[in-house]
Image 1 (cartoon, rainbow, N blue to C red):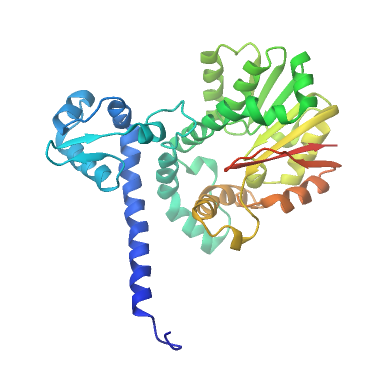
Image 2 (image 1 turned 120 degrees about the horizontal axis):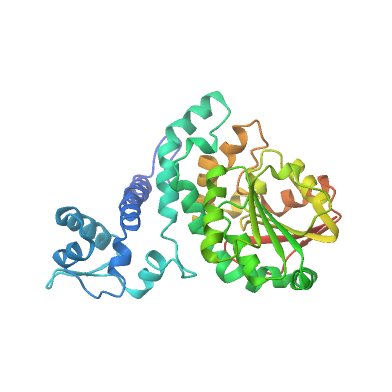
Length: 356
């Protein structure tokens, strides 16, 4: 063991290699972003082994750029490379993660988040010196498109199939014909899916981001539910009283400017016996329990988006690693007397049922 002031050279070498692996991953994320943005992964799906010439013909992209891109994917083991035939293969397992947006395993859109947050990192660094933060207007448009794409698989495969069924009283109300509000609705995917699952109910989506509301309206029209879903640019802290049988927030409370004010407003907006469903990220509030890839992801995106967009308005800046103790504290401070963690197993999401 090295004495004080000395270093363990072998350990230092391992640390340097680990950090360089992170550098490689960061740079490679830009290549993956390009492949997603240009549809290269989709072009390779179910195509079998392809040469660079064949891929260039399929995509109408520059062959020289494609060659370097393919080599980077092969080096990262995203593609299987056959040196004898000089072909590249996107296997089915990588296809469902990178090319199939309807798959429950699709994660390709996260690379949009990486590029969007990296683009504003210098501004966030300045906030370390001055305080405050970044507003949503500081982010490129694809940040919000990526958020919508990221959440869609979870909503498609879990929202109406697992999450809402864990609350029988909610299912009963919505089947009869209830009124639902999704606060912080973004591109409206959750609201649209609830409208489809419960055709007798009326659904509202509220968000402060006007561009997201425009996209939500287009999404509703494409889904054929524009007559049952209404999207409005509105502040969730000013909801109408006594109107909703169910209010939902998905990854919203932790980056709220005034989480208690928001939750009080939601509590007032519920009908008697109404339910508030809170979805947050399934991580601990204790750092030592988050020393793993998920913690690395969540603390980073929290600093680069969730926390800073709250602090930009003088907000609470809770951050994404809120944890159950903070959720209980906020619920109590907001006037909710019932708090239950839903018995839903999910690697990413944790869900709480609140009632006044």
